[in-house]
Image (cartoon, rainbow, N blue to C red; front, side, top):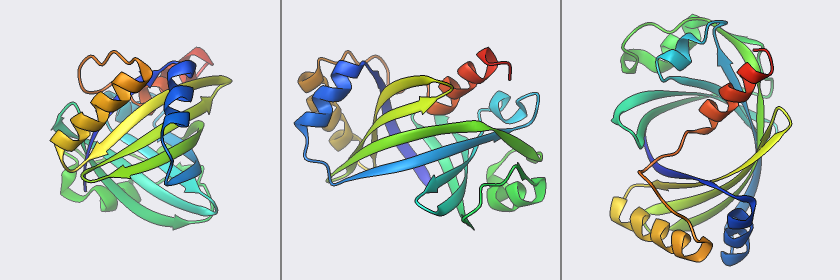
Length: 188
């Protein structure tokens, strides 16, 4: 699947403004468990490997570059209910198939990021309003996933006007980059 999304980092006040402005279709509690090698081989290749746990279900997800700053190839496989400590190269390469330019290595768990996500669907676009916590830090993010770029830009403009956002470019650093920055600060 190709994932297209705009991302904007929010202040707590902007987050709260958007949270109260929309009637949310659903609110999800999820935890992303991030994986890489000890020298962060995947990160260096702009590849994300995570297990996302929602309720009791775990999903292995691999995100690969797709040539545009707001577009990624997202691959997913249901794992069951247990978060693994390690993920084999065989499993990763089976999931990635030919989408990965080079073979993927065995990876180990680095840590977790927990998110409360408000979801609001529009024709051709979806808002994911996130409050994330990791390594004692809290941040706020607006993601607009889309199949229709014009619809997504209209939703983004409404959010910008409502919450006083200044949008520069299409994408801020994603959760994995922010997580890894804190991971390194914490001795990882």
